[in-house]
Amino acid sequence: MTLLERQYEQMLTIRRFEETLLRLFSEGKLTGTTHTYIGQEADAVGVIAHLDPERDVVFSNHRCHGHYIAFTGDLFGLLSEVMGRSTGTCGGKGGSQHLHRGNFYSNGVQGSIVPVSTGIALAEKEKGTGAVTTVFVGDGTLGQGALYECLNMASLWSLPLLVVVENNHYAQTTPRHLAVAGDIRARGAAFGIETDELDSTDVEEIHSAAQRAVDHVRTTGRPFFLVLHTYRFSPHSKGDDFRDPEEIAQRRAHDPLLVAGARLDGDVRARIDEAVERLIAETVEAAEAAPVAGA
Ligand SMILES: Cc1ncc(C[n+]2csc(CCOP(=O)(O)OP(=O)(O)O)c2C)c(N)n1
Ligand SMILES: [Mg+2]
Image (tube, rainbow, N blue to C red):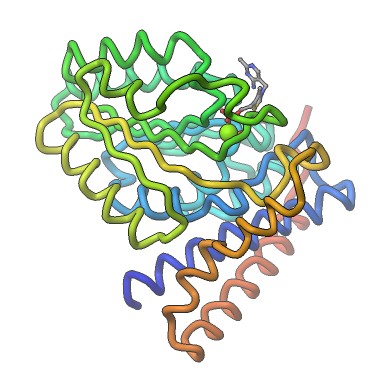
């Protein structure tokens, strides 16, 4: 399989997994809430390809399924977790937002993940593991002061921390221009941290930018601040969407799956599509058959 075929397959797996989650939610089969990553898949796939699940650490937020799947590939653990089954990643008690498996963590308390990630990066540095710790935050999280304390420490202490800001232009229903003043990238640069910025849904472009970012952290041991401008096609959570449908339609024309899919051979693409559908169906069947988590 070529890199692009693998990237397309991963993005499609995340997409179909979350579309399935929304269906299961509407059928009353999920416990708790869920936030989908639909439209942003190229970020997780482009960045996480450069990380080693055995050594590196990923910390995600409330919108964590794409990061989790790209890092662990564990569809059954995630689905059965969100369905409140004992076979879930966290025994069916963490739900959609609070996951931990191996070197993957997520937490729904906005901004809280940055100090924890900074601490992990410090610990990994002290242990001399060579790990890169990556933390994914949204544009809305730029309003959390702890982020800036952490950027200051990460720079001063030369911590191997990659901060990825996924600017999808909204925090819940608040558009970015009402909440975030000035420039996003400059927030990292102000602390003497290397930065980069990309406005793209092209997984190959994101892959290249992320390669430079991860290489920088890996080789210098210093932090990096990567801003990825993106868009979510789905509501913040499920029904809460006040955005202009025309705006969403325009963004859908740049769907990362369309961008990558158009570069694939038609037969190869059809085979991947079919394999992903099958995998998702098998995962749903297995999760539905799994025992409900005990009290
Ligand atoms: C400390 C805290 N305040 C408020 C919330 C409720 N909340 C959950 S997601 C969210 C918006 C997050 O926006 P952003 O960081 O842009 O991420 P996105 O949802 O766009 O991926 C809010 C306000 C929360 N989870 N934690
Ligand atoms: Mg946002």
